Image 1 (cartoon, rainbow, N blue to C red):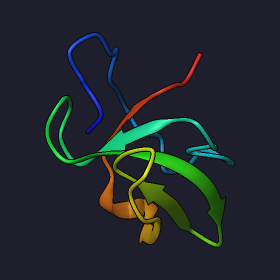
Image 2: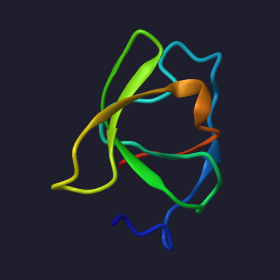
Image 3: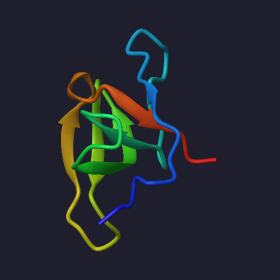
Image 4: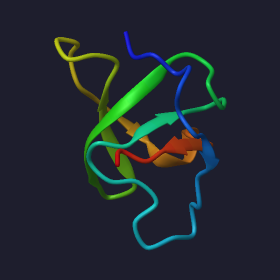
Amino acid sequence: MLNARTLDWTPMDHSAKQPARAGDLVSAHAGGMPIYRVLAVEGGRAWVATGEDAPARAMLLEGFRWIARNL
């Protein structure tokens, strides 16, 4: 499971050309659970997983409100 304690959460800008990119962490709640790592983005959906060995699934970007950029 991903740890949210040291992340800087910011509101996701859904109007941005690229609101999320591979490597970012996203959540419906800032620091809330579950937290997903973005693996890829296509057509308004993000392929996400909750951990390294977790299965990936496509979810609508609209469902996420918070983002922590992978720096």
